[in-house]
Image (cartoon, rainbow, N blue to C red; front, side, top):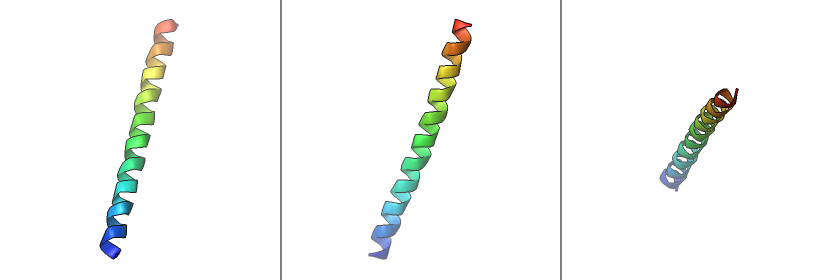
Length: 38
């Protein structure tokens, strides 16, 4: 049971890290688009 919860927690952490990375990439792309428009 403990190992199972540990695995799920690790998956959640990986998902959060991936989401934050995707947000950072999306923000960078958005800034590039805005910079091109200027």
